[in-house]
Length: 581
Image (cartoon, rainbow, N blue to C red; front, side, top):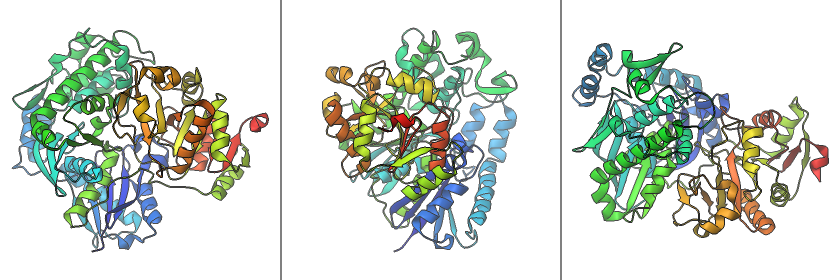
C-alpha cells in the first residue's frame, strides 16, 4: 500500500520541524530555525521546513495522505490532569484549569496546524490529521528508527509534553507498549532545566552547557539530593525549589524563572556572565550527578528486566542528548546496544509522530541510516550566492577538495565545511561544520574566541573514521551521531588533545564508509598528513545562531567572523588572496 505521511512538530512553541515519510522511507526532514535564522524558532510553525520536505520529495501538497502531530488531547479520566492539579495546589488557578480546561493548549495548537496546512496548499478537510501523544512520538522516534528487531526497552525523558514528562515502555514487532509515565511537575528534565536557568543559561538551550561545565566541578561539595527523589517507583521533584509556577517563581527584571527564591536562599545568587567559576561549577557537577543517579534508578526499576532479556535500549526526549548519562548507560554490562535518536529533542517528534502513524497503518519504517535529510545546493547555486553577496567573496573552483582542505587544516587553519544535504538535529555531522586539526595546539581556543564567540570551557568533538574509534576509545560501541561520550585512551589524548574534554572524554562521531563520502575522504587525507584519521568538528554557526542552511547563510557567517577559509561543494572562498596557494 502507498502511504505518504507528513510529520509536523512545534506543539510546545519551540523547535518546530517537519519530516516526510513515503512508503516507510524518510525522504526529508528539517528544522524551521535553519530557514528563518532564528534559533529554536520559538512561537513559529514549521512552514518553511514543511514546504522544503514537499519540494524535496517532488510531490504535490494533495499527495499527502496523513498529517501527524506529536500532541494529543488527554482525557479527564486519565490520571495526568489530576496529578498536575494536586502537585500544583499552591497555584489554584493553574490547578483548576488543568481539570476543567485541560486540553486548551491542544485545541489552540490544532487551529495553528489547520492554518499551516492551508498555507501549504493542503486542504485540512481532505487530509487525515492524526494526533500522537507527545511521549509516544518521542518513543517512536527512538524505537522505530533504531532498526532493532528484538524486544526493545524504550525510555523517554524530557521537560514535559501534554502532561507527561517521562516514558518507560518497550517495543515488540513494531508495536509500542507503555509501562509507566511520570507527570508534571515530576520531571528530571524540568529540574535540569530549572538549574540551567539558575546557572545563567536559557532553558531548552543551555542544558548542554551545564553538562560541559560539570567536569570542572566536584559533585561531592554540594548535596543536591533534597531536589528530587525516586521512591517506590515514583519520581518526586521538590517543588519548594524547582519546577515551580505562579507566585513561587523567582522573579528578576520582570522575568519569572522555574526555580524559587528558596533555591537562591540556599545556593546564593543566579550566575551571570561567561566565566565557569566556583561555586557554580560544583552546582553543575552536582546536578549532573543527581540526574545520572536518578535516571539510572528509574531505568533499572522499569526496564531492567527487558534490558537483561535482549540488551537493546532506545532512548529519546531532550535528556537523551545528555551524552555523559549515555556514556554511563553504555558502560553497563547488560546493555548490548543503545540507540539514541539523534534529534532527541522536540524537533525529532516530527519524525516520531510520522513513523508512529506509518507503522500503525501497516507500513513499517526503515532504520535511520543517516541524518543528511535537509537541503543541498549545487556548485552553480553556490557561485550565484557568491556573486550576489555584499562581501564580494574571493572564490575559486577546486578539483581536489579533500586533499586541499586537509592541507589547510593540517597547517592549523579552521575551515568552514559546507557539503551535501544539511543535517537534521542539533549536531553538525559533516554537512554544515567548522573543522580544525585536533593535533594543532590552540585551534579549539581560536575557534571559540574568534569564530564561534562562545564560552572557553565548551568542549569540541572529534569526527573520525569508524575503524579508528575502537583504537581511540576504551569502549567499542557504534557512534554515528555524537550522542555518546567515550573515555579516550592515553595515547590518543596526546595525539588529538584539542578534542579531549576536561574529564578525559570525547563526544564522538564515528563515520561509516558510504554515508558521507566527501567527509570520509577528508579524514583519509588527514590521516596521510597527520597520522590521525580524525578532525575537530563543531557546528557552522556563531553563538546564539541557528546552524547554517544555505550558501548565503554560510557567507554571512564567514564574513561575520575571523574564518579565513570556506569550502562549499567544490567552491573555495578565501579572505586573503595570498592564502590561495
